Length: 168
Image (cartoon, rainbow, N blue to C red):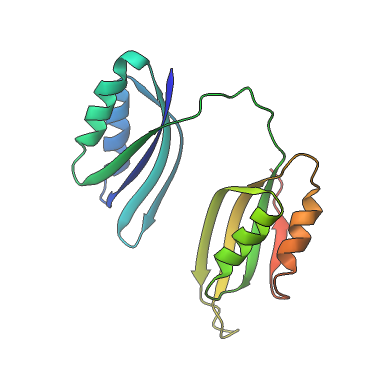
């Protein structure tokens, strides 16, 4: 089986996920994992699928024909035999400001860790007068690193940043 990673973007509309999933199923693909979002009227999604080699061209053509969507298809890494690294689910909250995501991602990278999933948003905090940044991040740690090294480094960015570990 061939692993494919699809990135899909286009104007959001009712039934869009059904349309995409039907095209995958009708052309012998299997929907494995996804992260789908609605942002500013647009649909943005990343989907991992698997398909037998003999149906590869067929499913690529079907996905390219989806109306009003820009679909990019990349080959995925099918090697699942590698060691599973330690993963942290972090909930990060603080005062919002330009560059906060860059600061967070830079600290994580400098610690040798990797962000594998990030959901972030800004919301108003009328009682505080400053918008609040909140994020949920999944971070994989390099072998031998203790989670406190990453958390301490993130919290040292600024005194108003709170980092909690969400248990699974």
